[in-house]
Image 1 (cartoon, rainbow, N blue to C red):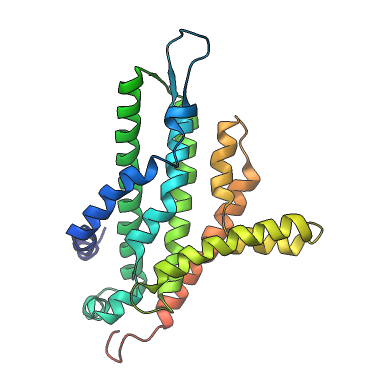
Image 2 (cartoon, helix red, strand yellow; image 1 turned 60 degrees about the horizontal axis):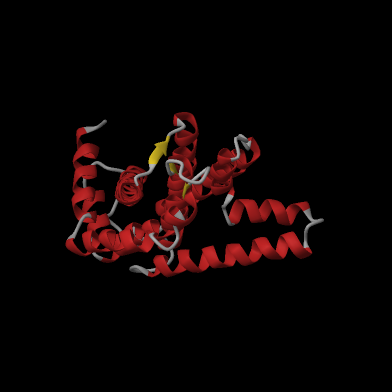
Length: 259
């Protein structure tokens, strides 16, 4: 990697991990508890008196499903609009770094921060739960790897959507837009499935604009069913929003000397 990009990545990581962000990351720990059915269902007894079993794949999937959106919201707030407003983007672009590389490095720092934070939360939650209930972990490496891949793709998708919104909204308003988009996506999916189920174009738009197929892919893995259609549609949606990110960041006005 270009030394300038390595330095920029290190700077972006330091700028992300401020005291408020560390506090928010700590808040994610109890936030995951009510959404992760670890105690009630993921640690179970096959027979009375048997050793409790902790299914790591199912547990990790539940935790990522609960926290991916919130993590993306926390870390991608103002990812473009905020940097235009505070002058950081103008400062970086005054060096031999293009807008596309600036955005790629910034998104990579955000995605890595979200993913590693949730992994840390999962380790703490599962470790404490297993210790308290004397549970034995059940590990399926390939299944767990596929779930992590799908979860990572979903995080990248959330960050890409937040970035698209940040190209249009100033400051941290893209955080609110991402949350409302997720709510709208849930409503749109219900509407399509119940009332527009015979319209294939509505299904296509739902899958592309309100991405949830990568989450569905992770869920299907738990059923020992490799849902290639979910993976392909989820990847297509991810590619669409990534293309939008790099297009819009190239046309937004920073100032007349930014490039």
